[in-house]
Amino acid sequence: MLIQNISNAAQVAAPARPAGNGGPGGVAPEVAQTPAQTPTPTPAQLQSEVSKINSALQQANKNLELSISVDKSTNKQIVKLTDKDTGDTLLQYPSEAMLAIAQGIDEFQRGLLLKQQA
Image 1 (tube, one colour):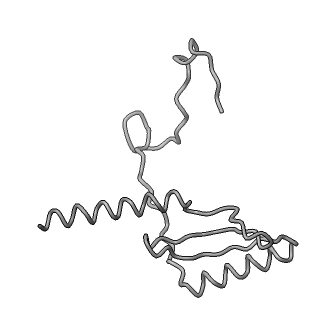
Image 2: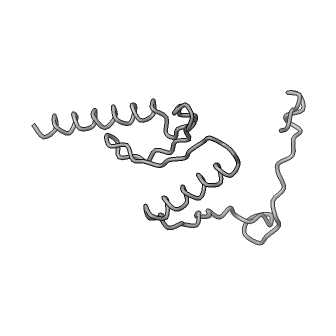
Image 3: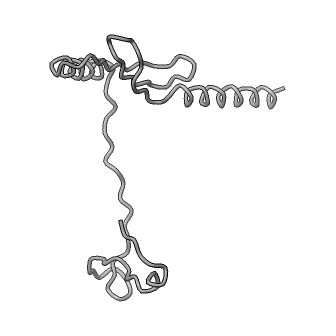
C-alpha cells in the first residue's frame, strides 16, 4: 500500500511497463487476456470433493460439515459450513439475504413480463 502526502502526488511516476515495439515510444499496447475456461464439474464430482473435505475436517477433529445444495426458488447453488454439534450455520454462500434479494428480483421480472404480455 502506498501512502503519500497530497503535495507529492503530482511527482509520482507511472508504473514501469515492459519495453516493446508495439506503440509510440516503444510502449507495447495492452492486450486483453481471456481467462482460461474450466469445465463445469458434474454433481458426482462435486459430491466426491465435498466428501474429501468432510473427511479432512473429521481427521482434524473439527465438528464441521460442508454441504452443497441448490435453492429451489432461485435455482442457485448454496455452499454451507455447519457445526455438527449445534447444527448452526457458520458460513453460507450466497447468504440468506442475497437469496431473498434474488428471489425478489425474479418475482419482479416475472410480474413485468406478465404485464407486457397482457
